[in-house]
Image (tube, rainbow, N blue to C red; front, side, top):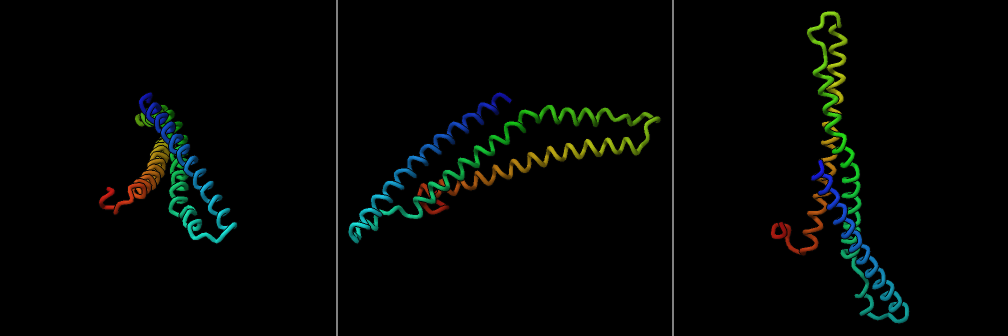
Length: 159
């Protein structure tokens, strides 16, 4: 648990650094855009038109922001799941183990109701983990696309 929390803390620190870099890049692009637009207003200079930031430069900044925010959201939702996972699972399994199957005074329908209630809770925990993993896969795909974009290579060579 401590190792998991430490690693997630490092992930948050690295994502914050990526977001700071994206903010610096966005500031540079905005200044370049403003300077080029000012030059275009003063004279119809063909060189000033080429100084405008391209959509690819802006898209890389937006993609960095999206990936960073998604990663922070993932880690923010994942930490409570990891912390409460062991105790929740233990409670459910203790509830399953505590069903008095051999007790003849308890009706079978109440035993089945308790059993299926505990199984439903266990499946809910599994679904929460699966949804979290699906969100993580989306973040990883976005990060992979960003790496391919940064290397400016054909995807087969970038992989």
